[in-house]
Image (cartoon, rainbow, N blue to C red):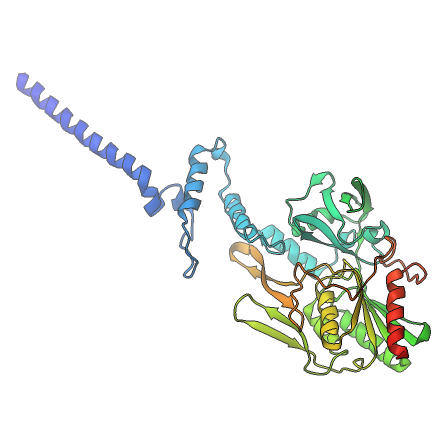
Length: 415
């Protein structure tokens, strides 16, 4: 009986020793093994491999953060892994500190595709980020935004009461748009106001015009280009032929509140004002790669004295045209400093319907002026009354900027 008891004790001791060794290995592996092999819960994460070429960095920071959330966060049982990955991807792009680059999940990518291909209902204004604020780039002609008197550089602080300082311009635009006839309230702040103002707007179908023109006194052709959209190419061709037939003494190109548009449109239109082969702009890709865009004719307006009108709502493609005219022909710029939107974005599809809208280049004028964040400075700086420049009709008596442009072009014509 004593022998059996002794054997039993020995067996129990062996089992306990084995258990202690196993437990020690388990605890040690649990503590350190995840960093090597990414065990549960990381085994459920697919495509863990890093890209083949990537700047030096320590991904342990990310995985330590991930582990802390999964092991410590009070609501970890309700976590949505896909939302966490999308949030991390969004934060990665936001770390670039570039207001024009953003991560778009599948739903946002589909929304953007629909916006680019079809009609939409909104209030009719281009918006963007400037110095960390959501701002109006330019109101579009005849739209609720223009009729309400919204102006370039107005800061949008709230959308229907929702704080929007942390929103991307894409996210804000989605909130501003909505069903036809519905309303949206924007909390606006303007630099010369003492307090904010709530502006209630009714959403309409937005139809963006291309341009208008008319002949002023002394045979000065006044051309107002609203937007460098695709229909502008044909419309400008028709207007250019009409102007050439009318034989103007000079041309005023009004680019105020023009938010830009397609690069193809501005490079094609520039060809009417330059000799074939003259540089229109440079694209700087941030390394040794630089792409040059040149005028491709017909140059039929290149010998007519010209002046450009611009203001804080002159942006993107409109700044390209103004900068090229100024650098190549010393054409005078009249009005106010432009917005400073001079970068190129590419929408890059990634897996599972997601995408990244990423800035791939910056625009430079022919003489090397960087447009992004700097804008163009006028040769003749003239401030206008707040009511002017919102596309509600030409009023030379009130439009001080246009008056100055007429004065400048008249001096060129008379000389």
